[in-house]
Length: 546
Image (cartoon, rainbow, N blue to C red):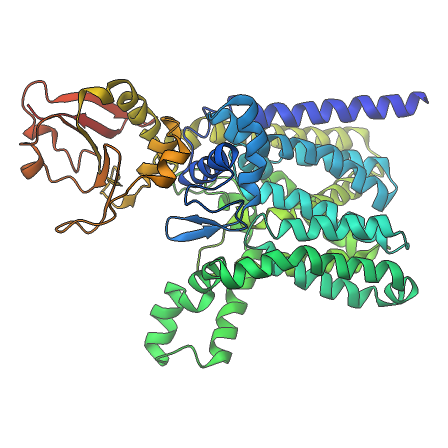
């Protein structure tokens, strides 16, 4: 093996190790708690592992029924081997995503090397990915966008190789592109649009290799049929109806109510969508606050770092003016990548754009090389050193700022958003549950006001390792007169706590926020434990009436 090859392998191993460290270090502590989505996927995976059925009794489902929603199945299935190895733990839940986020780095390197044939671009791109706050942030908890981003990268890479005529690449491309559609909602729109447009711009090569093209299309159809079935007959199409842009509160409040009574005026909705689509190019979203990893403020974290602003500008210029292989596919990648999130009624979400990371990082890598080449041409050494030193200091400051946000500000400011405290509450319940005939959780919580509704029953199922077969078969009570929301299984009840009435109950344990359990009304010995958020605010009180 040549010396240069050994050096390249060593550098890539170091870059991958750095990326893995940033994704795995204290992964169970930051984010400070599993989210409701993580818990939902994990218990479904645990139930399938133990019984072959999800918690609702469906055998190897293609759609996971969640609370008021339907989820894609692949994130849960990817957790099954991890839960088998590590048990039903926080680490087991987050391990697959962190692993795929790390594996993305060397795969991205090989993709860049194959497309651009230049080691500098491949090394720079993989390094930028390894330190990307955007990619690191979502790799540290079970978020399906990381898996989708990797699978789309592989699918498009193999698509480019398929155009040379080999059937194996057609099979692999269709496999990963279709598999992505079982991973997250957005790819269900992105993949068909990308494939259709990619075929159009590559039509001469498609016609030239009809056998390979036919294999690609047929494989996509065959692998996609189960998803079509689940969309039509198993409820997964419900999500699209719920989140379509016509239900956007801004559209309803400022457009429909002002001018129309329905969404039948499509031109109006079209222009509203154009406005939403263009907002994704807002510099504040891209560079400053897109991640929403902290409380609202002037400078947070975006998709790219602030020091990448000149790199992105230079990279776009370089990309446009230079001859680049498969340039049309990259344009389609960007256009179709923004489209799914832009037609939803939700706010812009950086997680739903994760499969765009290859294109954006390619642009920054091209820009870095372009600016480096300009710097080399500067004849005065002192000026060259001054520019390089100033830029280096800016990079160091920006990366330090990002580290502090993710390691300190994020767990302090966003702990409540991640349902922090429920794990500790269930741990207490698990130790003391035999002392009580009933355990009541109030799903409403919040420091500022009780405006957050948690699926606390999922945390009970997960952290008590509640037997899936028992949960599938036992009787559950889903309503009760006098309660807007009521759910009960075993000795666990999930309902609103009214302390004025509940304080007279005996042998009952209550878990709720300070809004549900006012401390001033407790008698001596009734307050058994306080659970706090990372920022010091009281999350839950655990109380038993005397």
